[in-house]
Length: 147
Image 1 (cartoon, rainbow, N blue to C red):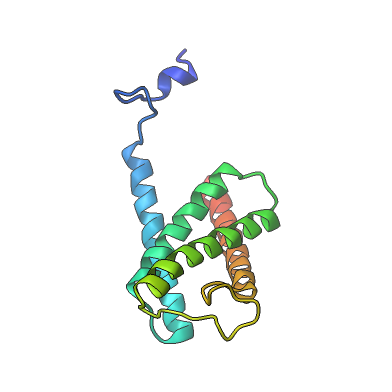
Image 2: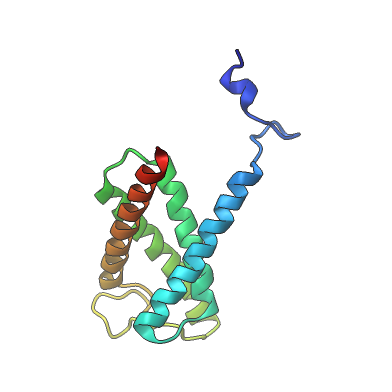
């Protein structure tokens, strides 16, 4: 009988190898976030920006790995963590894209309690609702495909 450790492939630095199937899944999840967020922006704002597509892909991929890491956490806590992750991405990308490069992709300055015009509580709440929906859908898909 083969032990668990014997089944894990190691690369030359004795680190766990990243199987091609995991890389493929990561690319697919990034692409879904890339396209999904672009579609959401086009539906609600009428346009999007390439930086938002990349951010959407990075957010969904990060949320995927967080969901794997904390799979037994309550749904509300995972959604709250997701909202925080998206808000942090939004702040980082906003500082680079809007404040440094002046692309003016979005501006929350007119909204209450904004920070540098890049993040605000209203959108953090909207990200929370989006994460609730995504987590609910993903758990349904997981249960459906599990058997």
